[in-house]
Image (cartoon, rainbow, N blue to C red; front, side, top):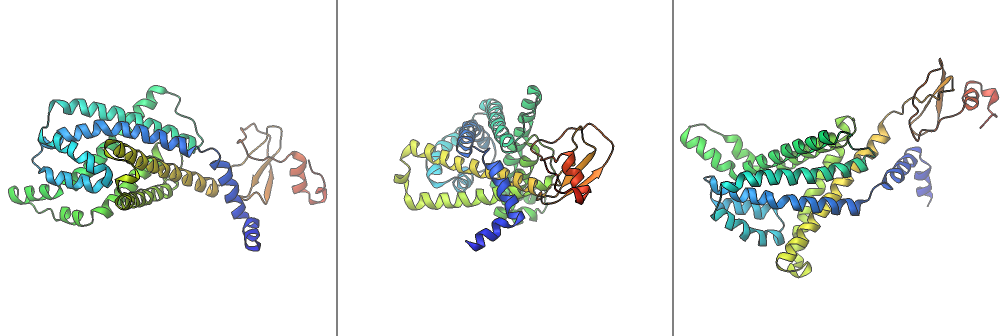
Length: 340
């Protein structure tokens, strides 16, 4: 208990506890994670349709594609989705590609819009006022993210064949692709971290430095990898009886996996918010009727008062402002007893 009291009396620890209580009460992790899981699942279906019709048009063996799909998805999901994807690979339709592309981008922008709403709630900010600009922004960001993920997946799946083609027909050595294949998990982690940094920096309607997006990106990337591995181990040990059989088991497994991923995304944004409000300098606040500008320390334990010309400025919400009498008491220690 003495150790606990010591840490609670510590100003920095008290500040962390206050910030945690202030921002944690605003979160609705259960509802927000479920909402994101639903819309991401809705966006996955046309994306699989698109990939299933594009890959047969490319000169690559389907066994290689299926092996990477089985490696990326949990075992319970891949065991059922692999036969469906195999049917698409055996009979690709070029006419479906354009339809699948538009449908996948639209559903991805819808899912991204939900994710943007959730992050704005976590960051305690409002949506962009212009609805058209907001939808275009969601569409463009979703398109770029889908394109980046597709490019990485393409290099993962077909990097060896690209290397063989250039070396055999064009006599160009692409040794970096071989190195990329050897350290693909490290590269994948770095790419996921970059994507998450861009998301935390661009998506919320705030103007913060990019350094406040990095901690959440590292946390989210680590959480993604851990959840994927632990989930695969759980499914492998517990078997299909733990979550159901057939198509129902696939839906339950995928929803639970997406739900946990959404939770990690929200917690990463929460970490960014905590660190931002802990390390940022407090602004000067000036009351309209006051002659004094008052600046508090980060822990609100000390203040400095500077007399200046009377001005009208906006006062930041939730920032405690001392009155003229208390400011004068700081300037004149003899009048310390005067308090409001």
